[in-house]
Image (cartoon, rainbow, N blue to C red; front, top):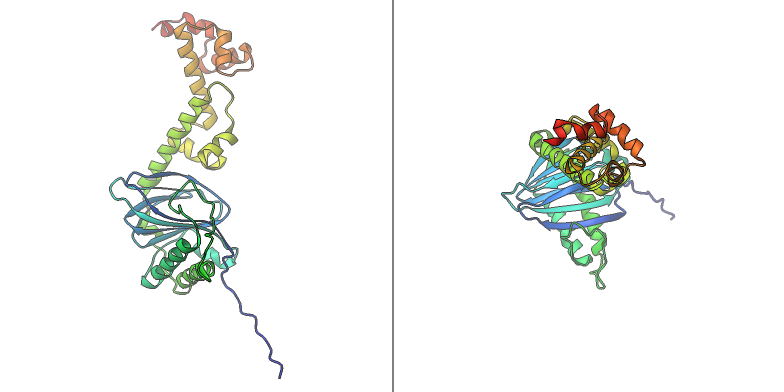
Amino acid sequence: MKLAKTRLKLELEIPCLYSFHYFEFSKDFLFEGEQHDCWELVYVDSGELAVTAGQEGYVLKQGDIIFHKPNEFHSLRTNKRIAPNVVVIAFECRSPSMDFFKSKMFNLGNFERNLLASVVKYGFLAFEPPLNDPRSNRLIRKKEIPLGAEQLIRTNLEMLLLSIFSQEYKDVSKTRLSTMAREQDDYELAERSIVYMREELNRELNLERMCARLHISKSFLARRFKKQTGQSVMAYYKHLKIEKAKTLIRERRYNFTEISDILGYPSIHSFSRHFKHATDMTPSAYSRSIQARL
C-alpha cells in the first residue's frame, strides 16, 4: 500500500548563526552600539543591563530577554553597580512569524530558561573559545563536536521562540522603559561624535566614515545628535572649525594661509568666506579685535 506523505509546516526556522556569546561583563562595561541585517537576542542571566533599542532605552533584569530586529540600532551598558552575565546570540530567521518579536521583551519562565541553557551548553560544546569577547563574532567549530550538538543548538533555539510565541508571553517592554538609559546613550553618542569631529578638523568631515567609526546609521546620528546638541552634525563641525581657527589666530604662530591649510580648507578664500559667514568678521578684522587680543 502506498502511503501519502504530509509535509510538516515549519513555523520558525533558524538555518544559521552569526554570533554566539556568553558574557560576564564588568560592572562598568559599555558597548557603543551597532546595527546589522539579522536578528539578535539579549538575555540577562544575572544582574541588570541597560539596553538601547531603536528609539527606546530599557533596563533588563534577571530572566529578561529582548529581541533586536534586523537593522535596528542597539547598544548596551552595565549599571556600574552589578556585574551581569549576559547571553547574546545573532541569528538568521526569515519566517514571517518573527514579526511577533519585533520591539518586544519578555521575562522567561523555567521551561524557556532551560531551553536557553541547553542552547548555551551545546554552543560551548560546538564552538571554540573565546565566546566572551565582544570584538569577536566569527564562530569556529571545534575539531571534535559531540554528535548533533549544532542541531541541538538550532532545535532548542527554535523551541525557545516557539514556546514564547505559543504561550503568548506578555510583552514587558513598557514596564522596563528607561529614559535615563536612552538619554545617557544620547549623551555619550554626542560626546563620541564631538571627539571624532575634533580629530577631523584638518580636513572635510566625511559622514559615511564617521558613522562607520561610531557603528551607527546617518539618520540615527542626525536625529540623536540634534536632539542632544540642538544643532546638526555639520553645523556643529563647522562651529568647531571656526573656534579652532580663532585659537590659531590668537596664538599668532601662523598666517591665514597656513591656518587655512591646517584646517583643511581648499583655499584661503574658502576659509575667509566661511570665517566671515560665521563671525561677521574677516580673519584680519578678528585678529585686530579686542576679543582676539583678550
